[in-house]
Image (cartoon, rainbow, N blue to C red):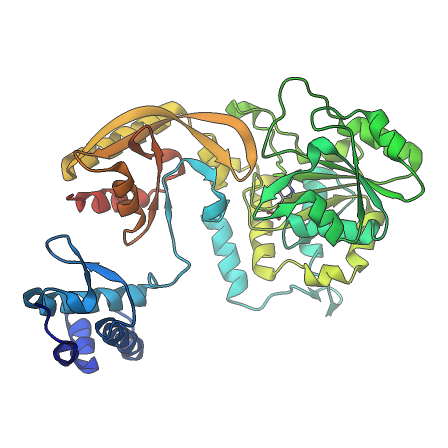
Length: 481
Ligand SMILES: *Cc1c(COP(=O)(O)O)cnc(C)c1O
């Protein structure tokens, strides 16, 4: 029988009792008294709400049953309560109670859209931290002592790296496309192939962005075949842009024809109409060294004479969320003058992260860019990691574990057909369901995201960071179902 709620409320310790216990007995707690007290108050309030049934979270009792907090078996309740309070307070002080949290990505999907896409190099993070914790010259011209422009800090780097005449950076690639539509095609027509009317996910659809920019979409060609004459026939005095969209997240194979950027640029030039390419996951590297299908590079787009090209900062560039626009100075100047640019502008932390990442490209230190390091890992490197993980898991947990040959993928809507050969560690419960094991990993103190292949939970070393291994091993050692 459950003891009643009043009795349970009485069992809750006073704030100072928990604070003293934490400050006396826990070496991890180095934070000041005020902060600990704040956390203890919050947690005790949560305990009160739990007991009164205001929250409906379930807790696992020692015999592995789900119980309401206030329904918890009587003789265990005091012990459970104490442990629970201490853990909750510690989590809160470490920030692990926050909604936005670190996650371990064991899926092998390098640019995981649900896990924040590209991660940044430690050098880049240091630079961002330095810029974030001090004042800087974001909009200050140090030479003249007058007001400056935030874009100048990155424009020269992008010109140097790509050969573009001019550059502008905004909040993300969707914003870049929107800004171009609104500046160059408001109330006018934009011609796009029916094979390139892409949906990127998260409800970003090329036709809708064109409309949001105030432009009118003119579709030409068919889903699988579009020819240069289709564009030519659609030209009229209202045409303002020929838009090419890189179909980065799907492939049309078989009976297929798309117009090359070069052909489109020729048509644009002879009719005085700007050609814009949305490259999506723009990359400085074509990836062929890694054995992945060739991606069109940013430099190639510029070389082709395209008027403007746009791409994301956090896909294959491996930097922060940003939308990068490169191309003709005359057009970039127009974009800079549009009032929308202010609403879509990049913030100083992302700008710092982008500058830090571009510096690594300048120095040729591609392997310091985490996503390129992950993408270039070879099967032999991964085999060694998978074997180490297998040995540790076999030693410390009650699971079936083996090394398997699998594939990782690029993700982030990039290179959908590229499969990167990988060696992975595969685990499954001796009895019980893999789904349950997958859930268990996801609900650990630090969530571990995995994928399931043929009744095995896959841990792909390609996307694991050095500190992740021990956390996975510790978490799995607690699996006892
Ligand atoms: C990813 C993608 C976008 C959107 O980029 P964000 O930086 O996420 O806004 C737009 N167009 C294409 C072709 C893409 O692949």
